[in-house]
Length: 314
Image (cartoon, rainbow, N blue to C red):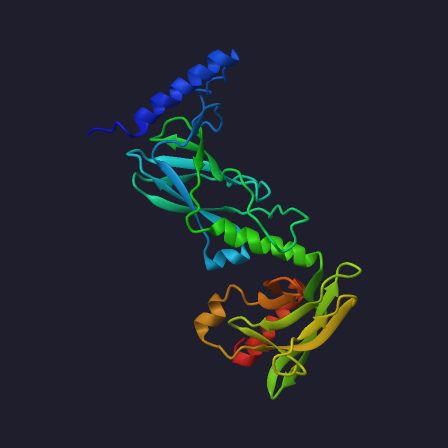
């Protein structure tokens, strides 16, 4: 079977790159220790756009709580490829450590590799009008073809699904909002009952982070599969839950957390975003943003017990 476009051809090209680099630099990296039984983890060879490897990005709902990005790597070689030290590189995110641990791709296989996404690097003067930074989007990794010694590869990324835009723009807008105001719950939840149902009461806070700025409104706070949040005194129809004037330092609203009413066994067992409540926050002269607001981690046990009492379990 012909494998002109497979691992041997790629290996020949990489050897040539290594020889040329050695001639120009006057030195080469030491050969791998022949006594070791592990695959070598360092090399000086860099293959840009390695033939047969391509990458796109994906983001799934469950990734929201973990902050990872899925690198979808396709292996179009005839060879089995083992990738290690996989890292996403882009000027829009702070550089994160590479994902350690080998990942094997069979010939023709497409595989999602989760990597840390990094923190958005936003120009401080951009405000809410966010433009994606230029520069390449790349995946750097160590790649071993058909059991050969690994080589460093840099795979260009085709972000056809617009994952970076979907992550970068709201992240920078949230940074701009955080420079204006923050939304949070108070530190204390009091167990009680509302209409005969277990509940916990506390406060929702809107706090100005500077001395002054645009008016900010919390339009509403949406619940999750297992929790819902209600204002103790509902605002008039069409009115926001909380309003922070341009010179106000802060505002509070008494709220209650209740079980959502969904007590199906699989909902109780599989909920992954129980405490990720979403607040719709409108900024005067800017967009309406959706930001996560959640109780303190120390309060989650108390709220889980509330959920169990409401569902008659535990």
